[in-house]
Image (cartoon, rainbow, N blue to C red; front, side, top):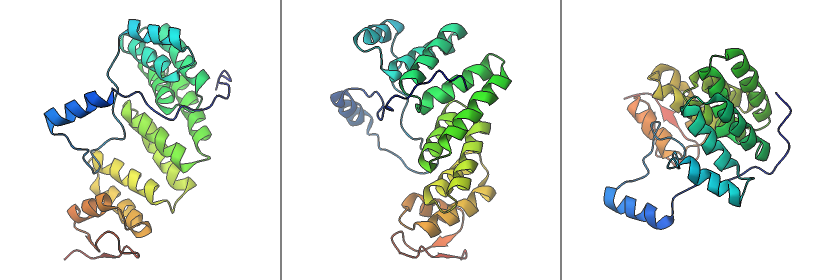
Length: 227
């Protein structure tokens, strides 16, 4: 790691469109939240223009989300110098900002510097290892930018950190389902349900895999053999 990231309170939210716009879009589209392994955590914010983002920085330069969005714009256009600059600033103001961490690693991959990508990814994995929640957030961020190898490493790290975490077992099970590997996914989902039977999404996936389960809410989370 570079040692450039100083401790700043992490940002807990993401930019969202105005509530009224959300309501109108849902009313027009008839959308619902969805569930199951194909659903991703959160949504990608509307891509704002560079001028909009720079204007927002003039109002609040210490906003890591805005620096991150600028980094993404320059990353997309392969302006590596500016992308690097804004990813670094995003992490200066929020060292635990997982999308910026994953985006920076992806930038090194995309510009042909795999050793740098490995250095930074390994550092972020070590940083997240103190918490299963942080490790799962990092796994999701890696997967969002297409870094499946690092996403899987983070998910396995979450299992190592907390083998009895229903959420960690669930997320790695859903990851394998998204990759079309139901055989590997199944034992993780079984374990997740055994640890917490109040997971209808896990119960549903187990049902589709041919595993008979008690109704979600049964305290023991019993799992039987396929009928």
